[in-house]
Length: 445
Image 1 (tube, rainbow, N blue to C red):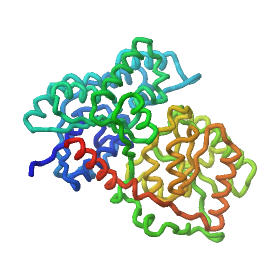
Image 2 (cartoon, helix red, strand yellow; image 1 turned 30 degrees about the horizontal axis):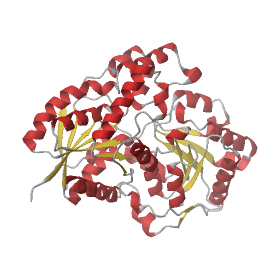
Image 3 (tube, rainbow, N blue to C red; image 1 turned 90 degrees about the vertical axis):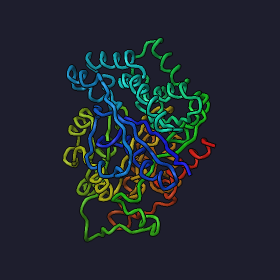
Image 4 (spheres, helix red, strand yellow; image 1 turned 120 degrees about the vertical axis):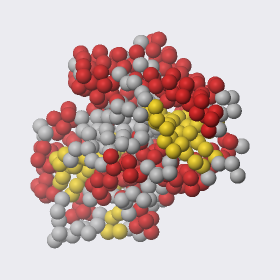
């Protein structure tokens, strides 16, 4: 039987850190279990916003990895203005926090680098892969974006090989992402972005979305879209089996054995996803509830925007903050497990309700209660309801947030804060890889 090979074109690959790298790292790990041999194509010298050397040990030893060099203007941009480093992770200074340098950098990024600053890798990659695909008899390719420039590699290869099957994987939307409107685009640039996005939707055999809403929106725009969410890996340092088999393990704290009631945020937090109403509620609780103030800790593990930290340090929360900085994926999971509640945030506008931050699935695997912020009727809210894992709030809510936190704190004090997630098997990385393999099989035939 002829080997089934799939060429995965991805910018993010270990030692890159963050959730963007883990999606295809995990697919590459589990696809061979279902008859598919993955081959990775990635840059030799990328400019990553975050590094996590611990992810290198998760790369399968027998995995074929092909690399070519890339030229990126971000390194030059960072020398001109240090805040430009944020752009690599889709972060921006907004409103009054924007300096003239930030405004200029954003305008240049949006109008000169379409769809993004990795566009200079498209032409040499197409030239290299055209020969590689022929020599290695590749019948299936995957492009994963952002950066959405990688979809242009797939688009051009699809035009060169009429029988080539192509999945365009959108980990985030292109023109519907919240920060798109902050790019200060000219009318002509906006039209070019939308034209390229439309071409990708129309030419890809499958457009893969990471949320239910995104898949629906992509279909409305002409794509043959399917949703496969991100997930959690059973082999990570998370007691997934315990969560599946013993869904109601009790918190070990009692009235006589209290330490700290910890709310943790794991990951990158930028200004566009800043839950200011949560900080206000927590500040008020600390000022008015001496018991809560005695026990509460707000823990950050990741990259938190300096402006957000500055605001928090000017409030009553200052003495309650533990900022651990960026941690390896393994250490981050340990921090999730040692917390009592976990915080997740999304962009506030309605167009972002389909974004499901990848970390939510690892949150689910810990069994801890989750407090979420974002637009109403978000996909995250549906997941939390289905798994009984927490509650989702809007950025305008306050009273309900206070009630939810106090409810969990009271249970914690009594030693009754239960870990009772349910229905999370559907989000295991192996099950998701099985779903992907079925799509690959169906598309080939």
